[in-house]
Image (tube, rainbow, N blue to C red; front, side, top):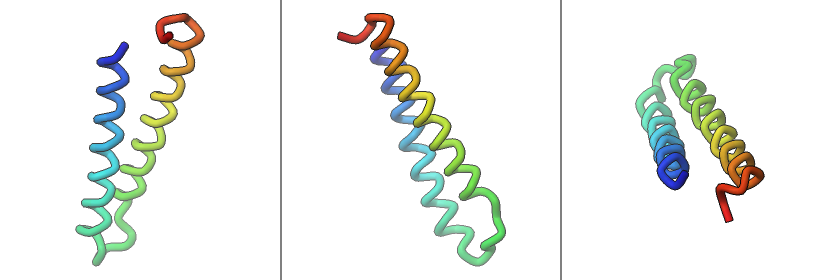
Length: 63
């Protein structure tokens, strides 16, 4: 379970920094959807992480 949580946290951080990269790189092209896509991925991963934590707590896998 620890590995799943760590992988999800790492993926969230990677999505966060990719969003920052796209924000800086696409400054000249404000209509580029890459920043919005990175934000969607980060929010989705965050929701998945919270869901995994709640379900694992309810199942008794977390103390």
